[in-house]
Image (cartoon, rainbow, N blue to C red; front, side):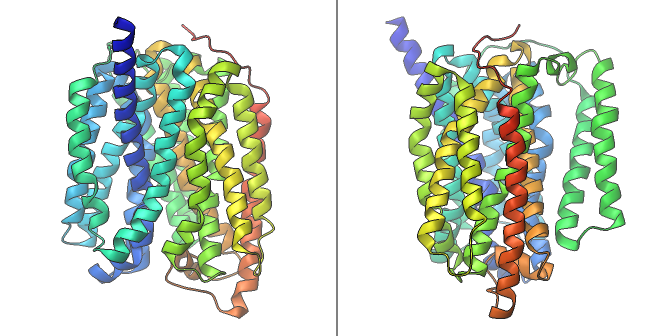
Length: 475
């Protein structure tokens, strides 16, 4: 009987966490297709409006690791549930925003809630689930992420097409209320270690990641110049010199530097960074191709990519079970290889390429994602020191989110080499279709961007061959 109750508890916790991951993922992309409507509503320019996307990504990228460490210290379920509340309230405030600047501010707040959800989800799963079920558990949370990414794009298009743009935020409110109530009732994970919070290290990490992210965003909008180059350089120096020095000296570091010396823990984290930089830009690039070259409207362009996401979601549980049986190494290598094949197919996109070709490439990428994400998540979490589970999950999310911002920059900067940068922005949000004199050059720019992404993804694949598949939790 106790075993049955334990199984029921695992399912409930898993459902709550998967829902949180899905909602956080939805709002990374849901605003994209609403950009033209928001611009018109507030009578503002494109560069300002794009900050409604970037504000959320910036906060999530900079705060995931500190909030994961906060969960380690004060209770992962407390931080997670509070994140749901903040996320829901911020969503409601976004819908009521009187100005574009208020909307951007509330997106920052929403990102704070999303970061609390992302930072502690993997740790809660690792702490709650039996070790022989971790693979399928991470497979289900991968469904939450993939479904969320799909819903974010498609829902953004559907809701803004048939309703006001405010509906993209209001839809979060009833779901968030229900999930928050369920979370406070059922999430009661134990406190792994009660230690002090590293305020100094967290502050330096926040500032360094904020500088790197802001510099990248500025470079996306205005091109590479001395100012944004110095901003990025200062951020990198703070991260790799000052932050590293602080973490070796403070009593309760965000993440024990000694833990990173264990290759089986640090290697999948490094793979996360290269995979996210190399692969997460692909969705931006393909949408730009479908809208700028093929002339599809934003909603139709997003629907072309749905089969890949649906297949990825459907296979995630199956791949999770395979990981539990055969280990995560094969899944990570196989997943990255399929993603690379998908990118190589995209390098062959031309003006007259049929839409079915794009769907095929997205399906291969979806299968690769179904293998890679649960496999790499398990690789990180089973090799993390138990007292740093929140930090480990948060750090992995941080690296992925930084990769998202860098990928966005990569997609715009590299693909717009051959055309004015303004057109690249407008193509991405669906406000411009290129004329025949520019489309050929733009396709060449996209090809360079795909090749660049594939090269970075190849580095992740090479690193994955160095992994050893083990389920031993380090202590």
